[in-house]
Image (cartoon, rainbow, N blue to C red):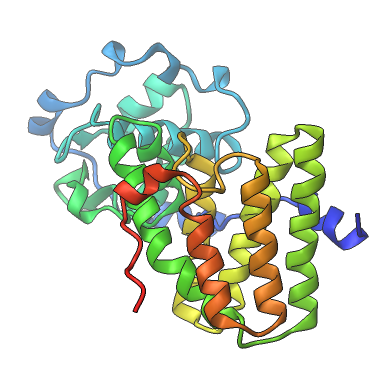
Amino acid sequence: MSTLAHTMMTAARSADSGLASPGELDRYPYAEAPAVDRVGVPAWDGGDPELGRMGRRAAGSRGRGLHGQLVQQLGQMIVSGDLGADRPLVPEEIGQRFEVSRTVVRESLRVLEAKGLVSARPNVGTRVRPVSDWNLLDPDIIEWRAFGPQRDDQRRELSELRWTIEPLAARLAAGHGREDVQQRLADMVEIMGHAMAQGDALTFSRADSEFHSLLIQVAGNRMLEHLSGIVSAALQVSGSPVTGCDRPNEASLAHHGRICDALAAGDGTAAEAAMRQLLTVHPEVERVVPAPREH
């Protein structure tokens, strides 16, 4: 295995958390909820016991520190419906419930506001926004929906979106012919092969995600490039064998190899066809998004 491939396999992608710098925290524009709103505040004590004291949470939550964990907790509660639309979120009560400081609460609400989950207005306070306002392409929201009550809808929608994005990206990427990119894609296929032989599903998944993200990034379309994170999120949250990328197998590996070969030959049509075959390794996906008819 090449050094480049090993490095790419083990390097973690850093995600933009959208957090404010320390100097900006005091300018977070939320107002305290009026007294009349406090009647309808969330019943924290009746929730999931896992959504309790922040110090008991695992360190694996997306984001860093307590604010990252609180974003994760509140985001899951909003997406799952435990905190319904237009519910007031009182910072003091959140801080007391999760045993975190006012600064942590403020910073966490700022991140949730950027994702469209809450809104903060003077004299109204911070409230949960309806689903129509959420940024459904945000990787965190994709993850929260995929493991919540909306899991089936989320995974179906992700599959449909991949069917729209990836075959086109494969066709466009074939026109670039960059040797460095070809090598990196080949490295990912090599890693997947080694991982499959060793029964290492996690490494296989990471290399698979890198392969698909890279392919979209080199398609030469900046709008498609911005969607590469969505494909990565889709691969990470797949909970059933919907596509050929969801679990290590010989067919999946072979289709990835065919995509590489088509890209190396500059054959956009073959690259697109190979990607469609990869996304229909399992027959379940054909009931989600029928393959287009050949002309």
